[in-house]
Image 1 (cartoon, rainbow, N blue to C red):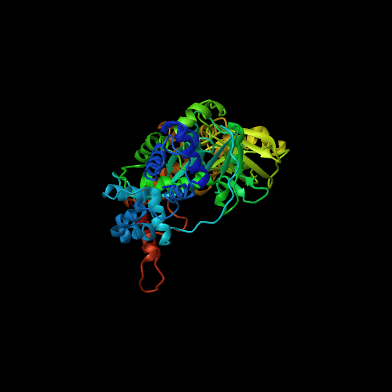
Image 2: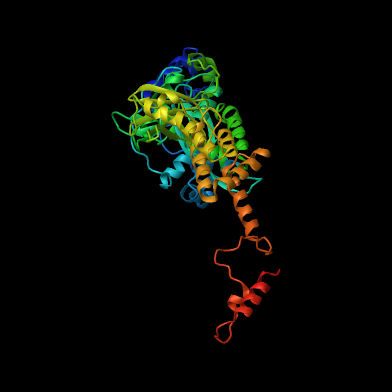
Length: 536
């Protein structure tokens, strides 16, 4: 509690006006003292022998009145010491081990029946050196309504999801308007550019507008090159600030005094909102944070301004903010890519063609992708725009190829169809079906494999397999090869029977293989043997 020492001249003036007929209320209003203090001086003056119609006080009477209000310890302080002494161990544990704020300690003591003022608790803790030392700072100049907002991240604590049981660390994106001290809290799990922009969009919707300057922390998603004099923002965050119309001003690295209003708010949110509360999911934390900003943080008496932040914001600052259109922002994604030898670039697992005349293979490009379009930039100049493709997709413009390569990619399928027709009528029809479509060169490799099947399994077998595949509308080269393999396996496993092969050129009669005594055969035996051989 503040203690004001009244000087000798002020005491004489109180007695002089009292003797002149001024009331207690008039004396309090003119001197700036409370009515109880004025009554106390008048009561002591009466005990000293002074009256309203009497003489002015002499030196002895005036000295006694001055001694009444000399600065020094009062009984209330000794009683505060006596009230806090039984809680000394617990207070030290809260401040040193649990690292709670003194405001939270004051609340906990009140809940446990120890009612003392915050100032008395602060003095009690400071005498015992339980409070953290603070460096001397210089107060920053005040800003106008809607001029500046400060943003920072703070760790809240672990969150256990009620459905999955997973444990995740929850962070808080905190935005504080410098003029009114009205704040917004957005709990999140990551600090990626998409999560940060989502939180800022929720903040502008909460405030109904945006400040002209945003002082932010040096987190990698927004600041690419932290520098005390010339900080460099990332392309995605710089484009977002340009779209919304505010100027981003990164603070210096490890300089919390550059954003003091939100820096203290991190401890305030963690101690007064998250600790001791139970939440089921991240969405539950966000709903609780919004209600807490309106019902608790916005309706408290701020320690510096001594005003209610929500009231100041509603009456003085809301109308001074930049307008917010309420349309959701399509978050861009910037990447550095290289043009491949096939005149395409790879972005988000999809392929996009680049014009050959300005972006030959090996050229470095900047890619900006959003939900609908993919734009290619070369040295800041837009060179190509494609519709966004899903993973594994391809967007190719034939005009992006050189003329010689474009001619090859269009005529090569025709040559393959001609080669397929040379192998058989069904093979040619199969190749024509395979290479039909707006981009026939995309099936060139399959057509080349079709021709190799004719070399491996003979054209007649390939033609028969293609005829069977066309009958069931099976346009798949791999499955066509499987048909050929199954035919070969069926032929190799056929049952053995009478050979239908024609007689060889060296066939001999059975007598040619008879073995006996080597004698000269008579003419009759020879004729009889020939006769038997000829008889069927």
